Image 1 (cartoon, rainbow, N blue to C red):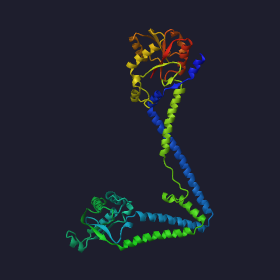
Image 2: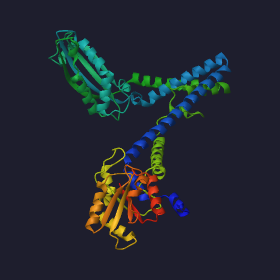
Image 3: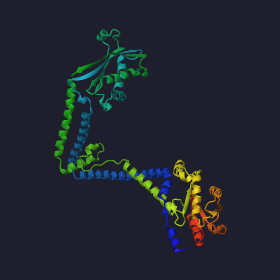
Image 4: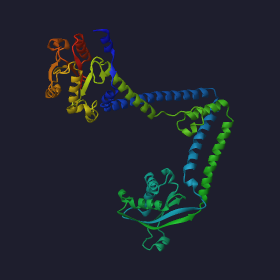
Length: 484
């Protein structure tokens, strides 16, 4: 082996087109590895962020304790009282902002009144039946239904303030207005009232209440043999309620007083008390994020990061492709992706019946990417033309195929058959199951030879040995045929 051969042996060229094809066949494995790496990277980041978050919370708690240690008992009590006031202010302010009741003009508002006649037989009185309706209509499920059907965009707890149910036994006046009613404890009048704000749909609210009343099965409690509930009338009335106005004003005044009281208390605090109060508020998990922004130190509880998931996915895909490339470059198996530097790459032929691991091989994509290599009818004549071209003697008729590391003779039968049709004689020799050095006596070094390797099966060292063997004997080596 001379210096030129040694230099050539060290040269490895990678065909990017072939590399991309082989990588694309493993797209499922690449995708799975990318997702796995994304989960790992984002998970590690989340664990680290949680650890940092807990450390900061511990530091805040420690600072709170440290700050409290330098204050008198009376000063600590004053701060604690201010913190409680802050919580009450927050709660009351939220109620004032969100409650529909607080936005009603108490001296001029509309109220929907639904009047029902209730008759009970074979059991409890009408008052007891109407008490069940009262409880039912003010329940969480009922107010939630009203919100959904009427399109009300506030919490269900605020609906109870707009909804009221009153009921009385039938009086002589009622029996005069409604002749079918009897003046007994089995008959009663139930009024369902709902305060309408400007943005509420009166028809939708009325329909929701009527459906609730009609759909309530009071007999399931076994309190009577029969109960009849009849809607007598439905009216929308204009109302003024001084008591409502007074209650609204009282709530607003309470909020104002709490704010003033806390402001006065905080103004009198020393710097140490103010710092202690800020730490207490920051450490209180019930303080809203909007309130925390007023402090220099703001903590946000970590969450799963889409950013790190994407970064992990990209890194996973890149790492898989990098390892795949390194395995091709430095692995022990020969690959059609690489040029050995010693022989001419005559042709690559793909196996139309290839079936490999589902995760690492896409059969459909294989047929698309290797459409040319699978077209043996077109490619083998090109191979034979190349063999004639590379032969030293133009009229050479006898050639030799030497397969390295595999014994699938049927893979070469097609080539030999086509060669015979074109007037060429081809001799076939295989190194398998022996080692290349064990078949030297079977090789005819006097006729041109083409090497045949199977992608991912033939050992690179065996291919190199055979190439050097031919070079050392100055035998005519035409090139290399790669089988996929």
